[in-house]
Length: 286
Image 1 (tube, rainbow, N blue to C red):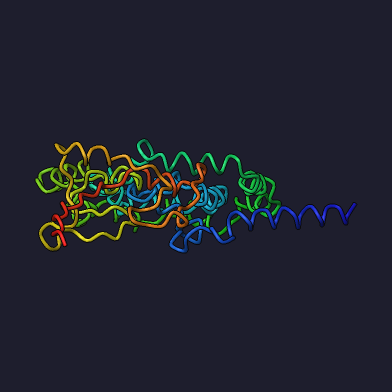
Image 2 (image 1 turned 180 degrees about the horizontal axis):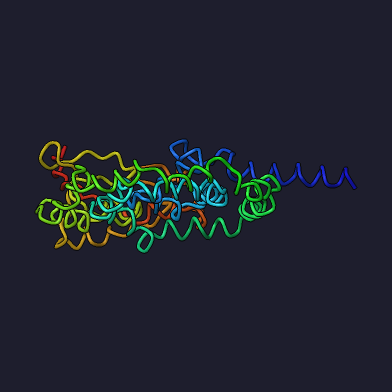
């Protein structure tokens, strides 16, 4: 019986490591502690990242199930600077670019579809709910120094002094001045017109100055301006929706890659900026 439990625990550990710590592990810029993960919840330009990628959602859920996540969140709620950070982030144009891909980027849905078909994803989630160490930390949370410190902050005069002095905090002054700043509205307008704000799939879609990925073709227009798209040219419109997986013009047929419909990176190459080749001069007769 003990041997079977040992084999099961080793198998689950390998399953979790294969999803969360393997070759496609979460990037190192993710917070490493539950308190730091709780601090990112106040920044609306960053917190949607955990919903875009299942590999970022797993470490977020692991931190959200820790008692120190909520003790750190409680300490941050008593700091007026964190509320100023939240207000300023909500008015930042990057918030538009951070949240819109959740509705407009098919790459996000394909990643979650691939995760729903991956047993390692469910293993990584279920092992967090059945972790005995995490259950013990919740049972001992009433006597945890972090929890005790959070409740003792209600008796700290410095905490109330911070709230009394918050109207003079430059971060709160910036939050009050931003609605009167025309650049804030221009930034939101620019973010709404930027194809990159709607996900990786839309980068380069009818974007002047962009070059089709993998073409390597130089521009024949003015130097330094890349290939431009003429929406009135039927030939350009015919090349607008390039079939993914086909080789670039002039490439050998043997170099044609395999198109995997379950690969989000393959679908991100669906829309490419069409190329306009200059007319060739007639060759003189020999």
